[in-house]
Length: 361
Picture 1 (cartoon, one colour):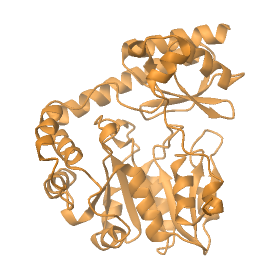
Picture 2 (cartoon, rainbow, N blue to C red; picture 1 turned 45 degrees about the vertical axis):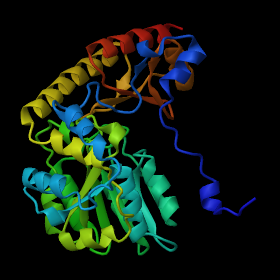
Picture 3 (cartoon, rainbow, N blue to C red; picture 1 turned 180 degrees about the vertical axis):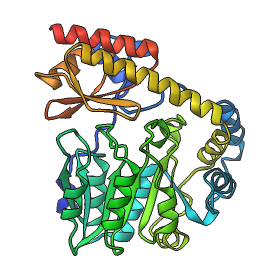
Picture 4 (cartoon, one colour; picture 1 turned 135 degrees about the vertical axis):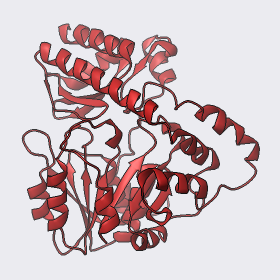
């Protein structure tokens, strides 16, 4: 048997959502009738025009993609009011996290982040050879920024701030985030993960893109997987100062963003009305589900995203298994909590019906 790194061998592979066909076979269900609310995917398909644009480039599959993402990069730079050189694209924000950790980490370093937060932060720290420092959330399931600051030491090279936070959906006001960034030494890279940026309506929030453009040690991550509904294509991007982006690119393999993904993302841009429609509908549905959970006496964290982190009480794993058998899949999160993605109106109705049945036993 080949000899593997002991820290990686100790990991359990990341659990992606189960295939609907497997769930259907196991529970005697029709796969087309199963409601999947586990991965924070959009309940609709891509934006108008995206499917046709993406399909049209399949005939060019014999050619490598544009490594610079020139067309997409210039269009996105104009939309964000940044320079093309401020952008770095990757095969989803996870790939960008891997590249950042590779560039910044290694033995004798550590990466600080809140916990629970996006579990891939732990993976990328270990993959890069860094020690991961997980700082517990505060008593309302928000990042504890003071405790995160206290956890930074001479070995810290990266601190990750997920805002809004996944899996809790909770938010810090921009002033709080910026005060935290100001307190971090310039030798430490602050990664502000804004994967759920487009869903936020709270007036205290604003993107940290201007900070990333201005500071030598700040980078913002975004994704096309969520509100843009391109999860299958694996495309995200980082925003930072040009000199920082140049350094991070040294840890990135070439040709990581395929042509179809670039085309789909480009076709998604320039549709502010569609973006606002999806944000508004998500907000209405989120408020409805939060209210419905409260009516059932269930505690939920204050979400600003397209998912809700709630405590159903009792045996959460058993409750999730019961709901799965009824054709509705949500995600158990440990320590008495579960997370449900906000679906369309029919999916949300089925979630509540399955939840009621499972709670009643």
